[in-house]
Length: 344
Image 1 (cartoon, helix red, strand yellow):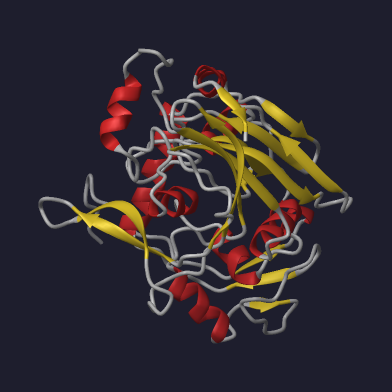
Image 2 (cartoon, rainbow, N blue to C red):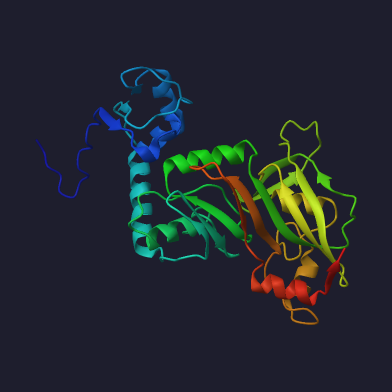
């Protein structure tokens, strides 16, 4: 038998494994449970082994949407991941271990089930798409003793405000179900260019997500646009708007409540009505944004004026209604104050 010096070792033969469901995983869908334990295995293969009956829960077949419970025994069949996927996962783990700085964020609420932080603008919620790391990776580094930390929902990188992180699997599934079933209340503060008409209160234009093309023909940045109601690619999107204050300098401060959580929903809906958010570098008034960057009569506005101000949800353990508020960051407060807002 030949031994090749410096060659790759022979891959280990995958084995059948049995996994006991713990308290943190209780209530999770079977498909999501498997993806957590079979990292690097394509989703299509995960669903294939469920349909074929190779995955067993307490020795019985189960569907992808069935929920596992604490104490269940899940049989994982032998699966093999490609060397490329394995190497990528290992490289990502090493990169995180070397380069992600630990960071604490302002905490609005915390107990044994969840954390609510006040996310600053300019920080992504997670790594990916050209971003090495985000809030969740930094928080995990700052809390190495935490057994479980997962994002409940997301905010755009340039949006500040309330962000929920689950500390238990049961809290994650409960809160995500609330977001999906529209049982949460999410209200933002947005400063738009122009005087918003007070009678325009409901925006319900469908939205379509697409990717820009780079010069070399590859896929570029993500964008969203309004489409007609009969467009098959349009996703129903509902935004409620309330005027909070008008200004003497042609801005309006709005309370914006979203009933659906589409990508860039608020930014696109407001811009489509002719009232872009001040400082928005994707859908805004680019010439005005350049002017606002320069200090003049108003403090310089170096970011988008969109802030996740209020969040309401049912506590995942007690069921009590929780309302959280995150005040405007100092840079937005200063700009709004100097714009001389007056009650509408």
